[in-house]
Length: 459
Ligand SMILES: Cc1ncc(COP(=O)(O)O)c(C=O)c1O
Image (cartoon, protein in one colour):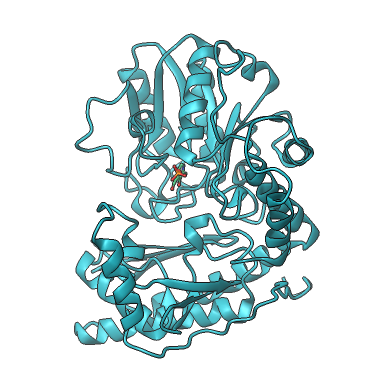
């Protein structure tokens, strides 16, 4: 990868990190959090809440809190922050649009440009786009469309899968957050090719992707014969940035076809360059019927969408006037944000950075099992990287949540924001992160794990 040019993010505000001024959280953060806590409802994103920090400003992959502490950001808004905080091109595009038009669903130049530029990079022939504002909303819409297109009603997802928190998406979530919300709409949750935690305790490639056979068998035993859609993350985010063998997706597509169901790739996290390609499903050579997009697509502005094959998106009533629309879908500001994102991804050759920095982070991670007893597995594709912390490498028993939370706090005190509060650590920094900062972030994480391990007699 050494031949690729070194990427220097275009930032007009340069913040350096780590830089620690106070205990974390500092007094100003504490005061703001206390004010908010008087009336905010519980249930905020866990890492934001447990950090206790209030953000003052951010640039590139550095976040500064109101007490002047600066953190290396390896969370990246869980895949939302594709361009880095406050990218100049993004800010310019939004500033320009805010002075022109901000509300409404009329066609605009910016939306027309966005639709055609997304179509250019979409999987071949999956080039009709409807826009929304959240990921779950896009997934729900894809399910409605699949029902209209097939006249059927069941949906299938996978163990470890996550597609949102609305009722339809809960039916196919295998991440555990469906509990306490039953009954959900008719859905099936099938084994996924998570090789580190293989459902059949086999080893790739000699397994011949037996988990896909198991999924197929389970589905055929459970379905009422009315399967409308199979939805799959080409690589699973919430499960711990899990990367299945490429053949798995091909097998899932074949299974959907067998049932006459619509094959949906949920590329909410993996789309728009996260893995070094426009879409992670390209790695398997499959063309989905529908692709759901969001998160990094808008680089911070709430915009999501359903991409579909022309023949699928004609299904009614989804395709009727107002049948698939929403109040904010295609909002002019959202369109400007997503258009600026696509153009910057292309114009600044950011995928080269994703591949180069991702490879260098993965090479560093690969040395960790020799250095850190708790590290059971490391994996990565572009800037989509995962680490499994285990109590014991043989049993693969996950490291206790309390210890992981200690690691998270240890990282904070050293100037690091990483999703290390759970045993399946997910790293997805901004696609523009510079190599030296990314490696510095990893060094902070390694030191944090080592320090906590030492305290627990596992050094
Ligand atoms: C793969 C995937 N699909 C859908 C969603 C839901 O997106 P949102 O939180 O925008 O509703 C998420 C969120 O994490 C996700 O990871």
